[in-house]
Image (cartoon, rainbow over all chains, first blue to last red; front, side, top):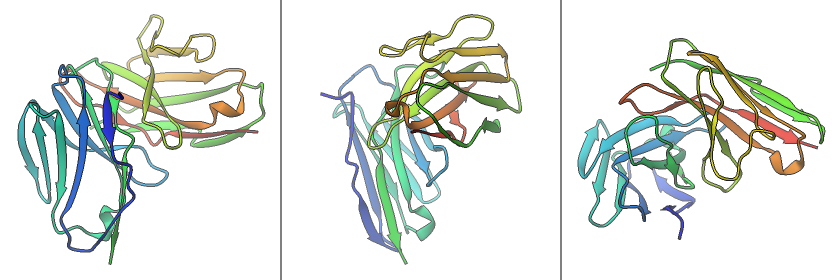
Length: 112
Length: 113
């Protein structure tokens, strides 16, 4: 079993839709959870950074962490064509000087 | 967050040759890392670049194949040695300060013929 599982999609939605992206993981030691957005021919860009369980909201983006289920989610409200990208979940045991373990990424297309 | 510049942005190389990738940051950072992103695969850590000492390599990656330097707190290089088509990938530099998340450069897209 891979440490982090993420459905690669692709996922295609109409503009304005609510998008739900998810990852599951197997290592209960993970405490820091991140979502990165990667546009074509660009590096991953940090979207959300959360510690332990709970919700975090930033504009149209909401990150949820359920450590009891080993499940994290990213919700995008009122999705825009500019949200079309690959979304990578990542996690680590510690907040600093620790490698990140990534999912494979979900490719999202938002159609105008 | 720090601005990270990677050079070259892409290259096409012959098998058996070596390529050195540079990562320059506009401010001093505590940690620098090198990752590989292969098609259809997860981003995978190659090594942690340690300032003034040997890099710390992950399982499956060795210094002879991926020598790394980090002469100061703003610069690191990764060399991909004796390249084969299996080394065709995107190589990414990331940086991190204490209690901060990692930030990535735009990567080097490498193709081996």
